[in-house]
Image (tube, rainbow, N blue to C red; front, top):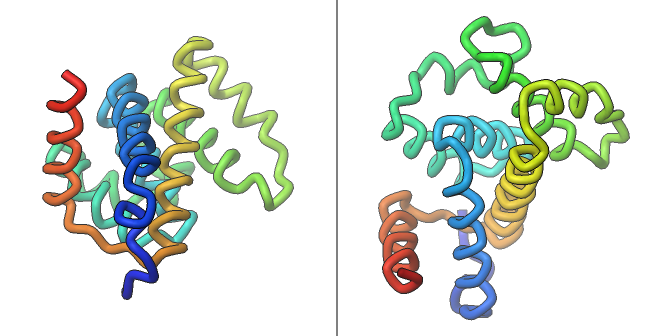
Length: 160
């Protein structure tokens, strides 16, 4: 993939703010659940960059190959918890808003598994990954996961 533009060079201040916001929201969620949500949204959006990055991070966090490979068929796969299923259903409902599907059933499942605060955090995370997918696909980004980790560590140190 060839970069069309580098958004970090074109709008550095806004992209740093976006990255900080992303990190703050991500740190508010269980890392295992967050990785599943990031991978599933990235699969739906066809974002190779984010799929590459988040599968690396998921494995580093202890996620199994089986669960990563079965994400497109999570409804039929017995290896996901009710909590994860609710999050994945909500991820799909929000990521596919333009398809006109109702999200009522997904929201009911979400409500049964998550507190109101957790619902907001998860919804923000879904918005963040969808935003990153659109930046990466739209601008043809491909970033090595190690580079992203280093940049995130640098931002975390700057905030602390």
